[in-house]
Length: 240
Length: 240
DNA sequence: CGATTTGTTGACTAATATCAAACTGTGTGG
DNA sequence: CCACACAGTTTGATATTAGTCAACAAATCG
Image 1: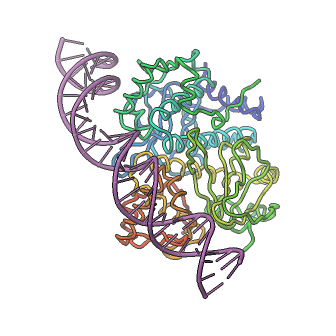
Image 2 (image 1 turned 135 degrees about the vertical axis):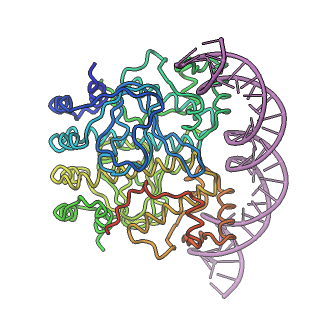
Image 3 (image 1 turned 30 degrees about the vertical axis):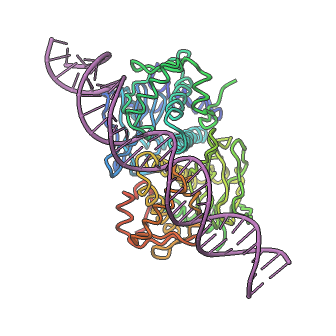
């Protein structure tokens, strides 16, 4: 599979994308790079001239607050373009980093500019991606704002399951998740101790298991109920 | 001032917007409506065919979680188009409501579609607005995730001050803020009791005062420090 | 195989939530 | 103009959740 294929697999969910548009995306020049885990890709304050496509592996965006605490803002899986917003927001307001070893594809802003000017269907599909990105942030605000620790964790894991499934990266209810408990804590507005305790409860109750970089959802109904999960916010279009 | 002027005042911050584009925006058909406080404008699950411009007053977006708790996702001030995302995300994933009495302007999706297809500069300016919206969500995740109650409150109020200032709605360090303590709590992932206590501390320390729908920032330096505020995420372009 | 990171555990603390009541201010109708 | 109603704010007491600290165990990596 070519690097660009994962991007197309994602964008195809947007039915307004034409075959001509897809062909155009295929012609985008992408510089592929292998990157070690825990490497910073773009830093707060940078003015990127390119966007980064996650081809393989996990990445995340984060901010470090004035009190030194790090907040993870999002996890990114293959098919995501986590810094697409840099196309129109000159300066990065947060960092982008790898979590696991990653294959990344870099696409110049001016190349993207050229295809969106030429093909309204691509413009729409990419704009839509940034809107879904925002929708996920909203759900994270709800998650951190009003849900107790166990629901937060369940919600995050179900969200990842759904997003991984949408690009074909799940096997039933098992998916790769190379994220430490400390990172989970930073994403959920918790500390590692309660994260560990909730994970153990889930394991003991045979609800789900996070082990060896892999999430296994055992009791699907229970996880969804604990999470209070409603997938509307992911705006996933199922091609029926 | 025409309803559309507040929108233009906002979009002018985006320097890529041409005079021709501004003329085009002026020609957009806008249906103006006066709306009572605490009215729902669009509901989760709706499929809007129009966008809503806040001309006067305060609005907010929120979600109600499965446990019945309401999380306010954003506050909206004149010049904002809080449901602009509905242009490309068919179904609303949250509610939009007024907080104070509001003047709202409704613009049909197809009218917006028409101007963005015709004028790339308008497309960019509007896309950019949705990206700033997302950037503010990110900062809210940080705010709720890692900051203590007093910083959260200070941060929210400074953000509003900056955004109000950007559309000329502040008078020195005083601005209108018709939001109850209970609503503040819902926006900050807190409950009304600690919100009240923090506000009293700020008042006693002559740092800031929230009274009669008005925020008065008394000790600017102290508020900024307490908030750990860095305005990068607002992506405000100052026309020097 | 030792070094380092990650996960686990227990005891204790701190922050915020919860509950319930009282108070204040504002607007309304008699 | 006053009494009342109502929304919003303030207060105190207590409960609960999650944080902190520190030590150890297990897994992973060169």
